[in-house]
Image (cartoon, rainbow over all chains, first blue to last red; front, side):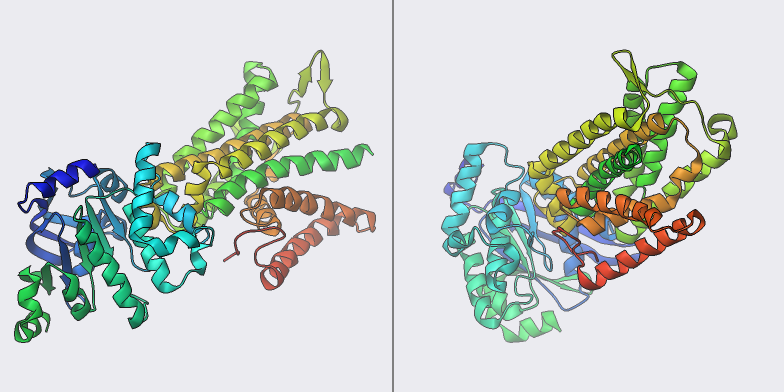
Length: 255
Length: 289
């Protein structure tokens, strides 16, 4: 899987990883996401932003396959991962396709050790050798996790927990990583650290990352592209740099 | 002495049910309250197969365990959709329905009259109908249950179900089909309760619905919580203490009309005391919510 992802990059061109095509989703008669279209490229970090109630989390649930367990459905449109339709698959089926979610709130198996959390992350990786490769890669990306391995995950600090959660998700060597509100519950000092780690994922250039975030200024610092939602509709889809330098436009999109 | 062995046999049956419920309730965190239903299914299925088909109790024991497993699996189809308190209610409802079936399905269960003359186990030409001779059987099945459960919870399977107790969503995000694991764990718990039921029926050789009231489920639940959720040795200890302790009431000279209500009061106060003093039970890993 690693090999194949690397060749994507070496071709030099931007390769499309995920394609969301006029997607609508909601709960019952309420449509929380209306006709949203965007693409995610390999090696890009995409910020999914928008005010409260804009439909960010509904869109994320639709992408991660958890919408149905919240009583929602995808009503129209489709989602393609590497050209393959994935709309309507369950979260665990999506993991097999290389898409995984770092949930907000309960991010870790708190009763288990750090080591066990990483092992749970690689639960579906049956091949021992591949497991070892992924494991070492996670520890290279997050060297601060290594000495914590015997500790209970619940005893880690907020920043360490968030890093372990991302590390755990990387254990399946995903093509696309969805991160829900990484700043939630983190002290501002730790925030930079976590975002730096997420930015490092892009430098590795092997996966696509979607970050849902309330803290717009922070996430714009590391994002390549932006999907901004407003009342369920896409208010801005495009380059992050344009938005970063244009306060007036950011205000227009966000307010 | 015969009486003490009899109490230990009963304790053994409860150990089987408590340890297996602990897998469901303690390790996997599914608030299942239906253990008495599977106990009932096991007891009636084995007795009826024995009485009507004339099969050996050893064979009907396996049939009963299989049937309990099947019923457990059917129930788990809805269990994997229900969360938390709803699952507790649904499984408690199952216990009530099973009890009600045992009382009202006259043609099959003889209603409140119960089934009598159930053949006991026999081996090598001996009939194992006394407490003494039955004790080794119950001990054997206890050991099987304990060892199988220990094996189960230390395996990767066990780690997954302990992860499910923390968050289903988290398990799905690492690629685990939570529904499949829920069904497996639930039907495993039912299987062992079915074995306990069959053992009970062939031991006492007479069963009636009063042994299978939904309150029995609560008793078993209490044993799990008392011994400690997520601890197999805790369940062994919890079940043994809570079976033996009320029997002690006989020796302090309580009239039998009082003994039953006093037993309920004792159980009730233990539960309250546990919540206040030791929410994780004797040896438990997790707190009772």
